[in-house]
Length: 322
Image (cartoon, rainbow, N blue to C red; front, side):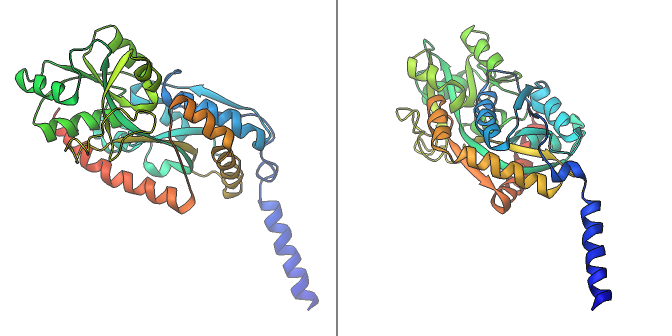
């Protein structure tokens, strides 16, 4: 019995020693949250609301750092390469991460296994919109104009192989039309392009321009979802217009670099999930038109894998059209 007790004590002590001190005391200093898109877009807005709320429970300041460029690839690379100690986290946008990994020409320095998906915050349905004084007053107007002059209407995205890009490909296939596709790096550039008259129509997300649609500055033609958005109830959805294959959205959640200890991941998950489920979070997200969709653990891991499978098909479409 004495020998066994000593063995047990020795094993426990060894396990304690093996666990790094920084993992036991996390967090001891401010945390950085990388957003792979420019400031001002809907991803950035949601991330900043979440960071401000989660730092209260995490007990440390959470600083949002924008690393935009290459449709999110620069920022996602920074997240993947970060030290896996919990002090550098990142917002991952699906299917943007998926399509970058799947596109051989992008030569991504990361794979889907480079990230640990911790907690999802937002599911933002796609929105096709135009300037408020655009001649296109409905999706049908846009489709008919595109059929008359293939390749003339300039349709823009927030990045190559973003969910917006995939939505363009879906509509082109479903309606048998062709746009002249223009890629921007994020929602701020896209908005400037449409308002400035440099492009004709934006494939985007509800959360990016919901206030501008409500004010009449821009006009929402259709929400690319199976139901109308609660934020834009006057705008039809693609399903009700008969475009049942044009369903697109963007999810955004917090991830850590591969190798981050499970104990630290759990601390992060607990703090961020509590923030996402709070009444204050719902109020603030409703105010900016971003729909909450909390997912953690097995549910988020399954969604992460499912989107990868779906994105493979969409990426193949895009590669064929190059």
